[in-house]
Amino acid sequence: MIEIMLYGRGGQGVVTAGELLVKAAIDKGIYGQSIPFFGGERRGAPVYSYVRIDTKPVRIHRQTYTPDILAVFDTSLLASSNVAEKLKKDGIAVLNTDTPKQIGATTYYIDATKIAKDINLVIAGWPIVNTALTGAMSKVLDMFSFDALKDAINETFEGSIKELNLKAAQLGFEGVKKLD
Image (cartoon, rainbow, N blue to C red):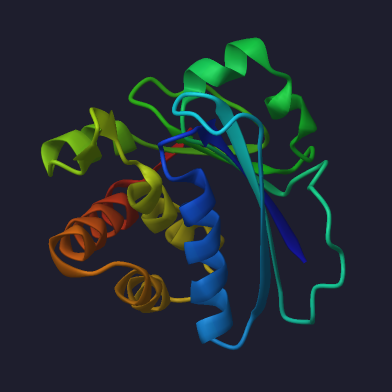
């Protein structure tokens, strides 16, 4: 089983990202579960989404305490939390940043904020970074094809917002880099 912790701020699409990853897995015959966790429902508040993906049915239903993969939607949150310390020793981090730093055994990064701004995937002044990060994560996870993620996006969004999310996911998939 792969346990993933998505960590960001309300308004960045953390909950939707978890749902997209699970939809992509399930559409390809892999089991998945997404559990959102957030406090006050407001933009900018810390938000978690816990995702489990496995080839067998997922029977655990609780938050993830030591994830295999940590995706951080806003790296400024790392200064005020110990979330990076929760990552398994051999874990993988996927960061939304243009100035990456090593977290865990392997760190990947993508400037999802720049992608969202460049393609105008902005709602109420907030760049929506979730699909760029899920695109990056689909490459890093290598459990299901990028086409499965595109199918999940097509099922979730409509119209021009769907097209923007597909483009963001493609740019995230193509642009994710491994920190050496």
